[in-house]
Picture (cartoon, rainbow, N blue to C red):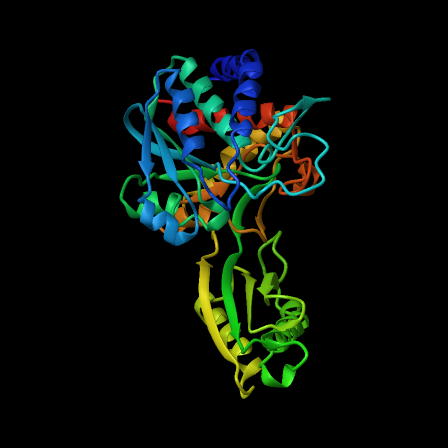
Length: 410
């Protein structure tokens, strides 16, 4: 077994330049979400893996469903690698959709520039990096030529930024996959075993537009929206008092991330649309929290003449919680992480939410682990000049490959 491990690590070292070049190609195809025209990226990845003799199943989500969701195109990929009888099916999941680059970059956000031991680009760290991590870990495993059991599946999906319901959620709902274990894209050295739930609401405040010189003839939707904002942010001290028992997770949070409204400077706003985000710790009940938030918003403007509210749920995601079987993934990743990284990765929670929860909701044990630095902020994830240390990519590939060997060696 030790000889196989050494051969596995040597293969990754020998093919690392190829892995970096592959990641550059994956970064260079934009997948800004919104607008979410992500089918071209999936097609490119499919062609790349087919060059190695693999088969990439292309699962296109129906166009009407995608458009109603607010995106342009989604094709999710499944690469199935069946081995011998008697073993588990292990799935590796990474998402290719990304938040738009934004301003302030010193390197081209879709350039895949390599400089001073880092690769730069949007999703270089989260999570196009794990397209490379997982593919080259799988290739290293198969290059050993040893008997394997069970199966490996690579799930490359394109809806994480909108909540994953048309990514892994859709693949699972359609019955296209049901693995026994899942490792999903990670952020840092830590192994994430739990994460927050998330509620996102769109709040539309309707008033009546009017001339700015005669505001008494109008109903100001922005004034009403301000009362809602004050109510939301007035709750933050109370949320801070709620504490999670999960290491790595603190308290619930709530914010308004986007506000749109009005028609011109000299017009009383007749309509304001706000999008809000409420993160829930694993101990909270999402259904109860949604009822509380809706009541908070409605009470803030109750009785205001001429004001009408619409509240639409954009997302209600469940928390990720450890399931029986996840301890096997954690033990293997920690053991190999200690050997490769020089320190045992911690198993902990994160206040973020991710696609892994969708597997957990189906009773499939899932953890998050992949290429990343010691702490998420070091990578500038979702910020300008997002980057990944090439050494961290190499190490994560080795840890994942060794873990796959534990689960799939006959």
